[in-house]
Image 1 (cartoon, rainbow, N blue to C red):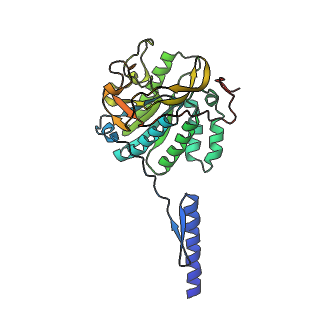
Image 2 (tube, rainbow, N blue to C red):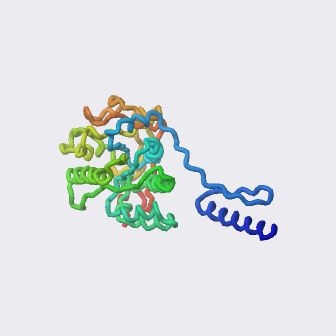
Image 3 (spheres, rainbow, N blue to C red):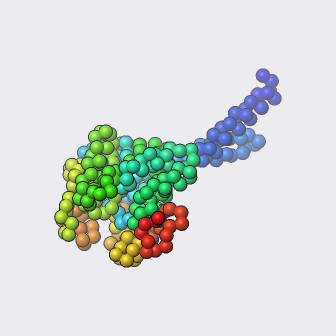
Length: 304
């Protein structure tokens, strides 16, 4: 091979590397007429002060995060916590309170070469037409973040755990969700399960007015750390007696960002022993609107 042929070969190899880098989200730098492929940088986690204490004990198998559905900030800080959990050097399985029937479509969003198309198919699943805050734009954003974390090896997988049938009572639904999470843990004995759910489901004690055990109460209590998300108040998209719409919410005293394993910091309605602590956003909340294209106008709660 002469000098010219060698130069051409090197340029071809560089061009191939460039295409590979661009397809992976990387960048290409041009230096002195030589193309250099730059690998995509790994995601830098938004710090969550105090998070490491959640997985400091090897006996902790489940971290439950109880949110107020329908905000931008609650799924966002959960995503930050999922990113930070990679520092535990354990397999991280992220659980989402979505019907288990959506698992194939969730997997497609995480693994597809065309996540936009996969997301559009996911949004055609029936529960995304129930506009109660669980089917928000913020949840789609979270899925896209989890897709990145999985590709980078920060998390192992994402699982849905709402195993309830359409005719199941609320009590049966909580039992089935807890049992399903325990089943996932049994299949992944070395994993740490980080689950996002409604704040009631994450309670480790029965709340007045309900009279049945919540999801967290079906898990081994010595293996569970349960947090409720608190914030500085603002707005949320909620299903209330007047229908689905943006509603104001008061502060829950979440002025400082971080994890605080102090049950006394939980909201005043929390029963004794309900949570191990709080996950505080440190900021106001804003409503996250339904994710489906062209949702019906408020106060409609179901898209036809």
